[in-house]
Length: 151
Image (cartoon, rainbow, N blue to C red; front, side):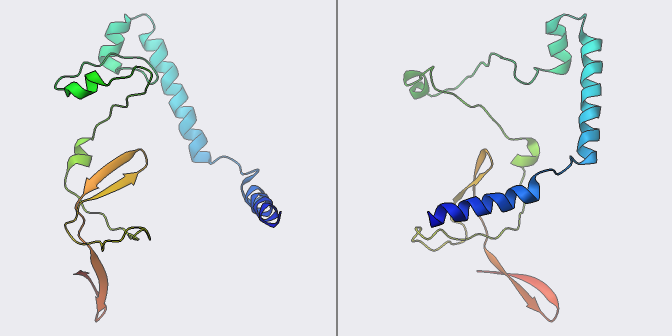
């Protein structure tokens, strides 16, 4: 009962902060611009053949398309279940490039091993999962100069 009361109080505080907030003016303006562009696109491509339209504009979001895959392992075909969803995705050229990101990582309490440099880790970011080999360092300030000390 006490826990439920705390949860309800927390929900009331959250609702009082976020209820009634007006939409951001920039967001409203962007939505209006997107709607106007969508209307122009429909007017422009309305009389054209759907195949010609797809050639120039691509497949519309939410439309069905046929994907032809090559080099698929035989296990995929053998164990394929049409009732299960198959997600297809890829990386853009910017995402494939070598890059640096500074983050703070905390080791999970159940993970017994010490995190070390050059140990491959899997990061879940939104819908995507990345495998990477991180370099761990500590930010070290010496005489007003920031340095990253490798650990």
